[in-house]
Length: 376
Image (cartoon, rainbow, N blue to C red; front, side, top):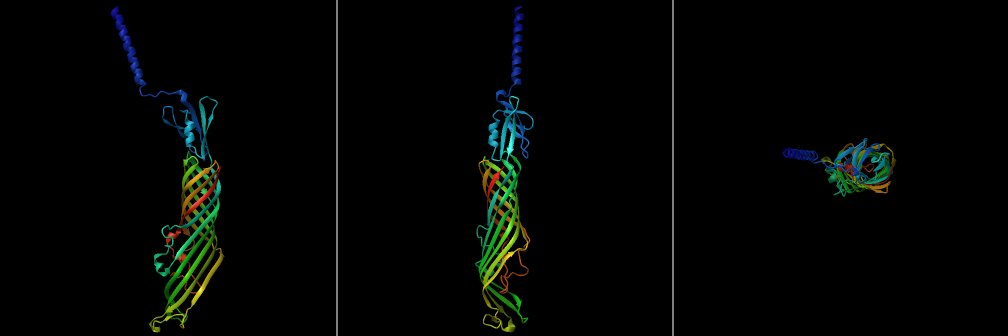
């Protein structure tokens, strides 16, 4: 009997040991859940924002939180606060059931404000190196200038947002004033012509002290798609691209110069150069001036635009931003060249603008844009 009792004890210990081993294997690798740090949440997104957010479960896994309650770590409000920014924030609301909460997002979708920009020719190294190569030999001391200034209002609408990322559409109608200036110390040219007597000759033109200004008053309607990344809660870095429609309302021009016109004839007239002392004296003309004001012929230009800058929020509503901008002219109903060969002035009664001898690089403009915004 003693032997049987010992056998029973041994069998009982073996069963207990085996059961404990199996239990330990079944629970091996599992992380115990501390229910004291667990809450259940669901997410109610603001219109136009993502339908879900990511949070951490008590098991240290990342899960999507949507319109159904899911368990998450109790410290989730700190995470949401780090993800918030000036235009996107979260609100945590309790429910009538203990341990269950609702997360709601809020966003400032609309922006109004004022915008101002200043542009210049997009040539950093030598802004006066804008003459086409075929005309460089005709000009001495050619210089170019541009002042492209605009000021107006703006309206922006958020298209979508999530945490510190934002995509929006901006329109900024403005009054725009474009002043171009051209100057040359000396210009010379020659071309085939026929005099009043029907004799062919080579006409020689010399222009000095050339000054020209063209002032356009315009309405500008730029439209841009913009992406913001909030590096800090109240500071965003942004890039954007779009189109700028420019309608010229009026144009004033003012050109002045001194000119000398002469003619060189062929062998039949002994290759004589007719100057101001000869019978065929075409004359020297000083203080030539051509002015037009309020020319209202319809002029339209389309520019492609790009920008990159920084926006700083001063409080929850007001913000100020500065951006570098680039404009490239895509289309204009004003021709780039005159019909026939270019000549700065064929007679004392006419002239052709130096704008017609500029490189395509003159279509590029660089500058700065400043905006003051109210976000709501």
